[in-house]
Image (cartoon, rainbow, N blue to C red):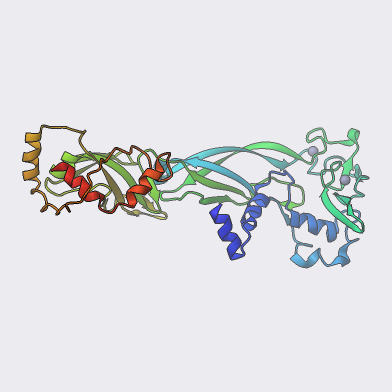
Length: 365
Ligand SMILES: [Zn+2]
Ligand SMILES: [Zn+2]
């Protein structure tokens, strides 16, 4: 939502990229994009009414008047694991697409069987005019439902047996998708000309868009990997070894020496253990580990042991002087209650007492 506001503030329409995707997405099953349709409408030259609107200036301006029309691209989303993106993978994708009918050569029936559609007068477009108010009309263009935008129909008895007059038949095809090492979420792999075929139309592309699935251990940030790891307070102070199972199955053993202190939330890096770079897989990013420290339970040891621990940890700072009029108050636990939680107001009150910390120390002595 905040993003939308930002876009608005910048005067950028977010819809621009969305509509681009939609056009390519082809959920309409229309076979060709709106531009092509427009070109066909005004310039075409092929159909019985082609050229009628040629003078309107819309048709030829994209230079598509004579060249082959290009079909719509087909987009497939392919879910991949982080392991796939680390190691590379070949995915076989079966997709069904329209191919030009071989029985009738994409004509739909014998020569002369094609008739201009009467519903749309061969234009392939239905125009709906809605009266919005006095002197105001809205014109909507949509694909003609009777000829599916073709502008031509074939009598039922003349239809090709193989494609039933549709000029195309559905066939399945297996595409080998090479997911290369280091590829990213949303990266596109294009198969040129593998989209739906239509007679007289250059087929569009099949575009595979990778979708990275979330991983249970690692989070990816570009070519780096991030992970969280929890150690006990003892380990954070006295050292430990940990094993990280990497995306290629290797076990990385990481040793942290005793005496090198880890604070809660600190981050340590392992160079060269991130994701491989795309097209340069021997080069790798880094692995970052964020440490959480599990503190001991309440009253985990005796008072005597605590005194020993206090000495081991280097004693305590000099006590703060407590003014005579200081008021002793109780501090309670606040499990999971932030400001704005049900007891949030109590939290705010704490902020109004800058001397509270002194009371804490007071309670301990
Ligand atoms: Zn046919
Ligand atoms: Zn029609």
